[in-house]
Length: 376
Image (cartoon, rainbow, N blue to C red; front, side, top):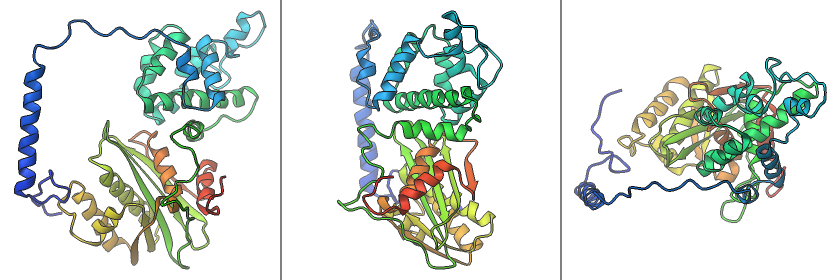
């Protein structure tokens, strides 16, 4: 594509004296704050808070998970090494990998299969940090001191892995990494921040509408975390009867803003469906700005301008007919859930599933097709 000049301190990438003044004024403000902060630092570091059991019981998650974490912290879970220590003769090897003795450190942090789950949820750094600690209480203290999102994701993974380990211990087939990580996120869905299975817009909920016959409908969604600039994307492709043929989810290490995350989702979906030969598509997104950016050149100089131009190039060259449509969040539920799932994937290993789709994807799809207000 041709290069172009863009002013990235404006949402549309267009230079104005007003925006330049704001950039200059913000720089002066930062300089003044930096000068006031020189020499005022404290010579003593804050004392780390002592472990408190109340921190477990005050967690905003289902009671069964709080109880699990309490037993985890007490090291009282029925791990094979714990059972052997109480005098029972038992094979102490890990029931998942069958390699080493199963204590808490091996089960939750060092088993080769649990390592895959930590990496899939982008929590490998936390796993390494926890592996250096001594004792379950220190591990729990470290987990409870994490940032809220990382803390809940870590607790959800521990809970989900414990359930998967118990299935393997009972002789069932080992759960896949995707199943464990999806279950980890779903385990935390009952928190106070997520009180219902379907977002509601304007006091009313709506369900997904099927496209005309012969048209493939692609629902896309992107996620963005302002704090660490990470992004995620998800998409699902369905026919005129509502049957899903393809779905995908992935993570982005660095993304500029929420609109860029939506654009990434669009590009990934277009590439995936073009690869399997779908020619007539209806693209549906819950971002009105993305719809405007794909239908005009108005945002070509914005931060996501290159992505918008790439998406428009793909639309113009790879498909016979394409329409772009806005949908409310409640009508875009499945793609929204897949974008959430994408947050926990390795950025280098996005997932694209073909029919038949995994059970956890079908669950999100079922919610899309349910009657408004019905919980599944």
